Length: 123
Image 1 (cartoon, rainbow, N blue to C red):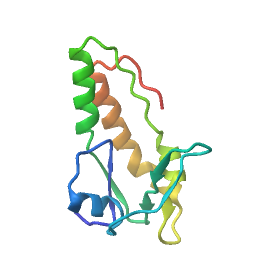
Image 2 (image 1 turned 90 degrees about the horizontal axis):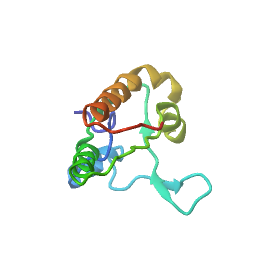
Image 3 (image 1 turned 135 degrees about the vertical axis):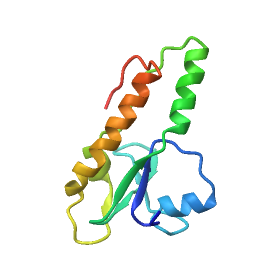
Image 4 (image 1 turned 90 degrees about the vertical axis):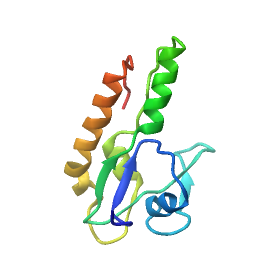
C-alpha cells in the first residue's frame, strides 16, 4: 500500500498507522467545515495516481446491528463527485479525473449495503 495514494471509503476502525496513511502520510490532515455547519471533516488529499479501495467494515457492522434490533437502516453516503470535489489535489491534477477510479468502489459499497438489506441508499 502506498501511503499517499490509497483512500479507504467507509468507516474503518483504524490504528495510528492507518490514520497516518489515510491523512496523506502526515499525523493530522487539514480540517474544514462541512458546508455551512459546525461539523468538520478531514479533507481528503489526491494526486493523479490516487487509488481507492473499500473498507466498509464499520458501516456493515452497524447495518447488521440495526437489522438484529429490527431497525430498518437507511445509509446516507456522500457521492463520488462530492467526495472528489471536497478533496484537495496535492499536485496539478484534476480531481474529477479520478471519477473513473472511484466509481467501481462506490458500486462495491452499494452492493455491500444491498446484500445487508439496507432498505434505501441516499447519495
